[in-house]
Image (tube, rainbow, N blue to C red; front, side, top):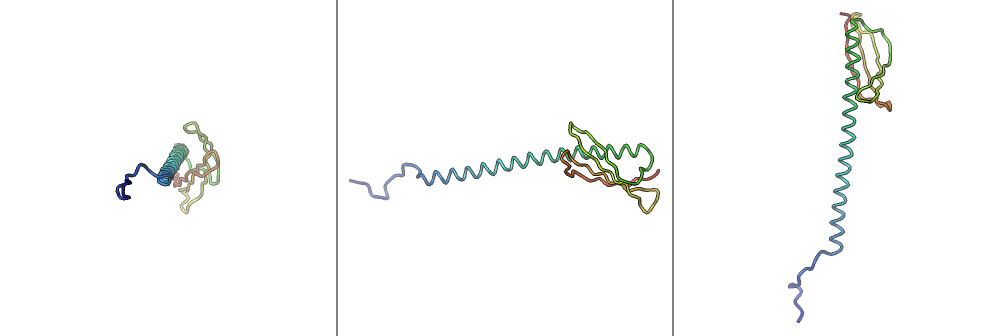
Length: 125
């Protein structure tokens, strides 16, 4: 005699249930891979920005050690940090007080992408 419907035991998962579970796992793994890729990109960007800061700091320190105001105008300088070459662009502008100059240092990566901008005021003293 066959068992009534309510007493039947489930023998396993249906194909639809397995496919839904696989889809959920695939979406979760794809999101994890995307997040890991973004983390890697952000880490490289942070390293480039830090090296660019070192370039700008070194350039401004050299100007301070010269104990002379730099000439007004634009110039460029190369900088190598941690095995990478960066390009620096310096813009020196006058201020209302002739004893001071405004100095903007922009640092670009090897592809010419802007990394950072340092702005300072330097005195004749």
